[in-house]
Image 1 (cartoon, one colour):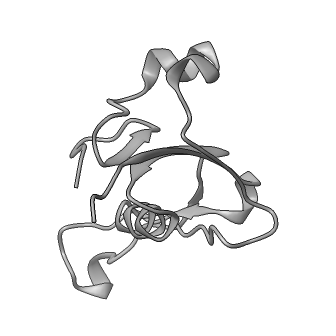
Image 2 (image 1 turned 180 degrees about the vertical axis):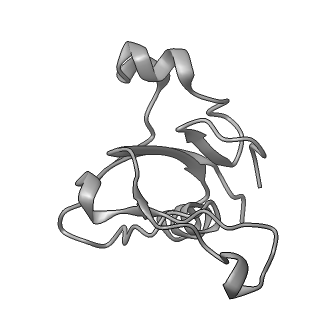
Image 3 (image 1 turned 30 degrees about the horizontal axis):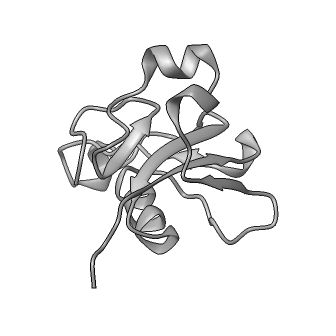
Length: 108
């Protein structure tokens, strides 16, 4: 069975997602995690399935439940379907990973 990558555009209420930022030091007294801060209201991710997309999003520090009724998901998205500001600041859409917002460590 051949696995095919799909590009997903995921929109969610900004207050429903928190981005966790971890420090290198694992000692709680030194700040294991900075206070959570609101994330953007959309994420672009390329994955093999919606479950794979959920795994990638979680790996990148987002806590979004893609099965939530508040989350809107478009699959097989193309760059020309996205707003201009997204097109100008996104990573490669053909590589498995989070491509918007652009993060270092593209691909998985």
